[in-house]
Length: 503
Image 1 (cartoon, one colour):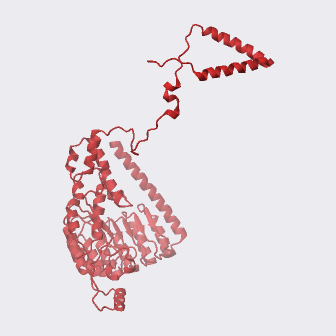
Image 2: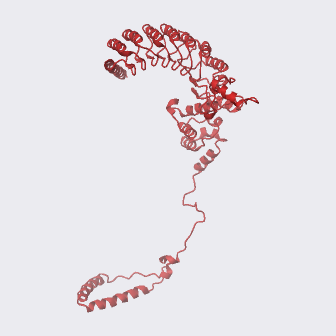
């Protein structure tokens, strides 16, 4: 029912005021003219509104909303209250599955794809591996796990596979912080079966020795002297045998026997590669038939240790790369390596950088190169070959037809070696990269190399920095290398076009 029609007092008062104002204006000359115009307009409007019923005026008392002072304010007692609707049932179910995933993990395979994606986006990265290892294949989840645990994550070093990266680095952390005779092996034993199907590379950057208390009454001065000389008791490190035999897909193994960030606790005994360490490592490498890359560097490997290692890996069926750089291998160890590459391996890459190999060891390696048919890359940088050893290696290259890269930098080689190299670049047609930097070849040696390179069409890279071979010779050699690079690039483009045309 409509409210009763009443007369608005305010309208009446306003109307009266307007009448008084019009009377005042009418008395003035300007007001008379304005009044006449206004009266004409009012007559027209009154004429047009004849026959209309005036609109009812509601009382302010009957409409409380008209006065803001009469409105009641409602304040929610729950500060988190909102107008959001009640969650959908499937959302509540997903929330429950995520919160109890450790106990309801088997339900994951029964979910619809869109619901499964929601669950994998929300489950915790701290779930036990026994729950997620064989169940979760989603790369997004393992990416979250990696970034939550490590600040730097270069997945390209792990075949662009986040799951593989997580399992390899997780196993690496466990081994690197394992203290023999102190650490409980339960964590390692439980992790190995879960990681077996995902670990292809193991990069161990440190190995902790067992913690042994100093004998009572041991003098600090004697302790310091023994530490500086490295004459303290030998401390054996982690045994890789039980680990490698449980990793059937392992292809690359890198290890350093030493301690990182030891600071003021430095001791030479922390960096010992003991005889027992060598024997245990050699046996497990020989038993790992899938291994393709072995890197044992910065571990103070000497002649005796490398001879033991080589004796165990002779005729290894799959080893293609051996890195023994930054050790203390001498001529006796080089002879063992020479025997290894003398048709007793499938080795393609050999790195002996930064060792103590002299002329006798170089001659043993050179003899093996004359018979080797698999090696593609040889690195002898930072050794002590001299001219005698350098010439022996260079002469072997005249008979070798598989080596493509060789690094002889920083080996005290001079002009006599450059003369032999000049003959090598004329006869050898397989070498593409030759590093001779930091050897005093001299101007005459540079001139001979220049004459040899003028008849070579295959070498695309030759490093002659700090060889004192003369600017003119170096400039001409670089021009020859540039032409060879252009020919190689054109050849590759031609081959690619032929392959694409066949497709």
